[in-house]
Length: 307
Length: 274
Image (cartoon, rainbow over all chains, first blue to last red; front, side, top):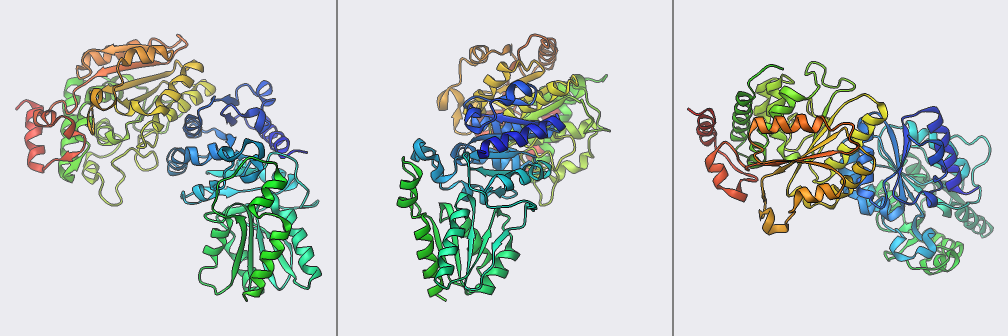
């Protein structure tokens, strides 16, 4: 199932139960998967048109009236374009608004560089009070949605729209503020966020075949980062690799290094090397941005060699 | 509420002078221009109860030109939301009265504002919330004329009309001045009434926004437009710094300027007509 379909299904369940849950869109509800909810929830779905700043502040106003708004757009327009509205109308004013950005990083594919946000996590990570969450599969997203809805405050959800391979199995329990350890090893800590998580596991398999055993930890919540888990793993293995579909400046790599700032532990990064995106399909983009499994294996070996 | 609104306006102006004079600097011009509107709203026209400041279904005010915080605080204190002595804590460390309005710090403030343009959108969201709750509240919001240069104002204007938010009444403090000079010279917003009408709003143009009777008449007229299916914009032609001549004479320089305690004291005599 596509991630946006899961997202819309969860929203429908929440809106059914609570008339104060509402969704605001900026002319992208078809892309976000929520268009079909308009007929079913006419008093809870609002299309603001192509006006994201207004959408964000309207949501803050609704929140002040006791509503639980979710706002959505493509990732760059849900973050860098409305950074001030998220900062002041929502977070500074202590309002309860969930911000959903779809098509993160290279997953914007054919929309190209203008729509390919490599900096959204960095932009919002510097705003006090904003929680940043990036789901890796359908299981985790389903588990997270009601938790996010009940959490009072601003959460940015970095949502991959299309189908993703399953990472989590039956019986998965979700804790918004606790990273998920997917595999345990002794030579290297791999911290990974978003859709690259499945590939990080594949890289760990290849490394295991070469005698390098890895912790693979999905950091689904990049802010506030689960410092306890990050520190414990990094101290155990003595080397770190971060993997993300985002600029290596400002995102997961930065967050992990901040957590490890007082440790003497080498760290390498697989991520976008401070550049803008460009138009293409995913395989090309992964190659040109250095986000392939081979890139992960090479960076992992380098991190281990630096010990 | 039965009271002399003209006297209330004087009280509000004097308290603005006292708290900004005590601090030594502040957004004096755009505070003084709002006294009549705030007196009319809080002492005559809003359905509010200072004893229950968060009462459900109350009317609300979003002062989108958040730098007029001191004017709103002076009004709230006079209306009994908190002790007038607290006005002297304006902008001091740890105060409940920051330069720009903060709903989490000040009793009676309905929305956090200060980043221009945003409060107006928030007010539209509040009005939408009230419509959904069907609680009959009227949502009032004040924007500045300089603030009307923000694109977000017009995004919100379009949305409010499209959603037929006739429980929303906006006021433009059209004092014709902004920080860098006259609004007409910096980036003209005229013809303002035509713009709001074109965006689908009822428009009421008040010739003298510092005449309390004209303002009250306009607010009542605006309230009577509920049911029109349109939000209403009341354009208040005001005087920035109204009530204190030397502040008026500073022109654009009165947006945020030093005020000594002596100057404040003299201004209070002037306001009282003594």
